[in-house]
Image (cartoon, rainbow, N blue to C red; front, side, top):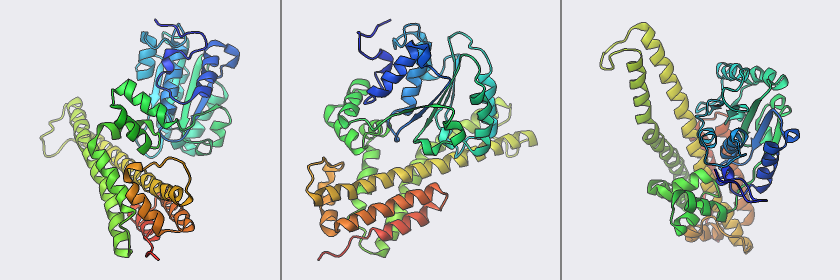
Length: 390
């Protein structure tokens, strides 16, 4: 086991970048019982490392050395395979009551091998009012040596009854340089590519890794950025909206179809059914139907997330154009696409750029509120048409 030098963060925190204040708070809780509490709420923008920080905290709590990063307790806690760590990471649109009640039952048990039993909910913002109420009793009357770690984008995304019973730790967007350094150290990414990916991803750590390692992701992002300079009329706007949705659906199918087929195959084999049979007994059909429903829900969320990511990329073009118009020395997100940025900057007034950014933000809100993505994208695209140059 490797001990951290005096004043330095323990090795377990090495992948939590740009969060020195959060690390200090959590490290103090590991070593000082008076600073510890039974429920923690991790918030921060997407890609800031909420889940990574929560898993590192779990490892530090279970590690005999407070987070050496090398022992079995550290490794299995971070992986989510430790006997005393239970992780709920939903791919559905919401967390249901049944899943929450299962966690509450687990929370009532004593730790098996470690100091604590740790329950990690990676998408606490997806708790419904009903599932939040199911969780409430466990937070109000905590079981000794059980720790809840909840993750969400912001305090406002979490039910007030849940957040009021948790201690809040806020993560910030990490600096581009630190995300780049992480990609180089952890993933062996070339420095130039790591810097490009960190900047293009706007310091979203997971997306930065994907951009650095997946050429297809870089091509899709480049196509999205280019749309800002080619929407010159209503027909262009409708076409761009369709393209954005098509890109998201293609990525969804590429990512999820093979996984869904494999899961269905495993289910049939587990039930002793013949996968090649044209019909299945009623009890098997019921389980297959439930699995298909889960796959559809997962696909819906994945598509929304991909569209939202594309809109964030598009938004960055108008942000960069505003920087260019103002003459600010602030670095561009899309330095590699400067010609597109400058064309947009010259075509719009500053007020027009702000209006385009507001239209994109409105589209994101509408899609999050279950508006059909294509309708929201078309309304947005019509609002960001490139004005005729004067």
